[in-house]
Image 1 (cartoon, rainbow, N blue to C red):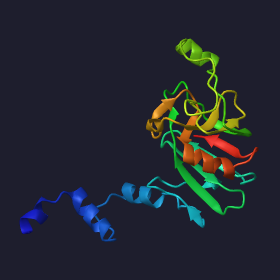
Image 2 (cartoon, helix red, strand yellow; image 1 turned 30 degrees about the horizontal axis):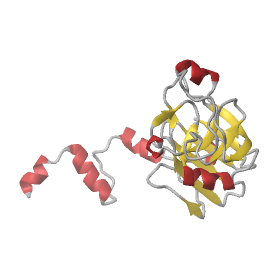
Image 3 (spheres, rainbow, N blue to C red; image 1 turned 30 degrees about the vertical axis):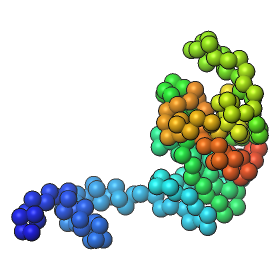
Image 4 (cartoon, rainbow, N blue to C red; image 1 turned 90 degrees about the vertical axis):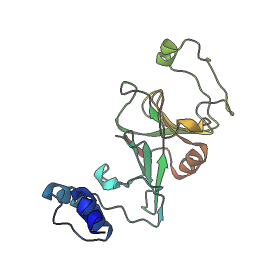
Length: 198
């Protein structure tokens, strides 16, 4: 046992103390400051974390009018808060394939469609001329069962029938969710819901 203790690294020792809830004098001040700066999760009655980090809506919006969405393209997660603050949801997402396809900034939901149709954008056809020109609602539709159209042309938050895409860089610019998640989000949001992509 004494030999095992001797062989513990400084990091392992700090982790062992942290697991016991004891602050380690060996941890550097920079590490301690970083821990203190972590945002406090919002306190809400309904809450889905699924192991993802939480965010505070106040860090992105002045108010929750019509509800608010933060889509984090780095963590590949979408956060939703209801206008009254009673509902906070976190959903895993797919994100654009490349940085060039990724758009960030403020927008809003301008249209909601149950059973969307899909047409490739002009840029998608330039990259892949063999794409179909139209796909109607149904299991082959790349937009899944629901779509939330954003004020930016061609950008949507939508479902996907290809569940392998979730958690990956897999889209041509849109934010994709599992169909069951977009169906829930579709009911929670309204035209005018504020959105920010970060």
